[in-house]
Length: 179
Length: 94
Image 1 (cartoon, each protein chain N blue to C red):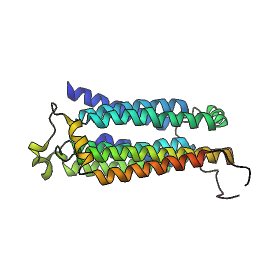
Image 2: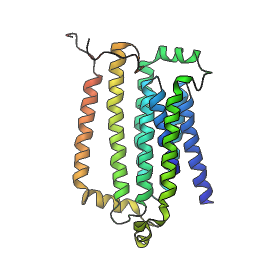
Image 3: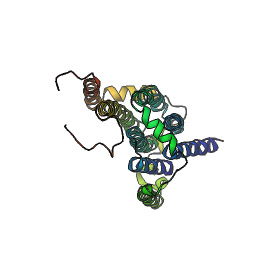
């Protein structure tokens, strides 16, 4: 049952990602990106990381996707019209080298994963009593660790986030008339 | 991990082929997400330190900040060039 749901979520993730890549219509691509992000959050739940799943939904679906839709609506009116003309050409010839690079890299990664045998790695077989069980309460532990042993990266990332927000607001403001 | 690998390669393909900056950005987000999937999947075996999950959170925040800045840059580029095709933007300062 759980294995079936996991496989289903994985298939949904990969096929919707392919659809995003193959779709010429940007609005459909963004909404399929939505589906991909939700199924990735489902995969996080299967890795017993519910807090990360909630964060994924809140940040990506709530923040990034709305931002992308905003930028799309503000910027690409004529891009949409241009895309409507050549909608039936899914894989043109100029995309062939990129497709070859992507497939070759996929083969390399799959080969590496099968040679690795992730279930028989030493540090995983040794961590039997360090593995999450489904009845554990993970959020408490994450909160305590975030405020004790990961405090320095936490502060660094908060400063970086503030810098990014100020920079984005500075970039997106109206241009003054002096240039 | 196979899902993460195929997601990463889809992102790579998108980054290389697309003629729209927003689609390139979605491709980059796919690649970041593939990395985060691996972090979370192996973070399952780290119960006491939560290394994988905490750094997955950091990576999500980083991706969100990066996409916010990139979208602001895209808006600016559109205002100046009236296009968001990266192949057509050929000057840095006019």
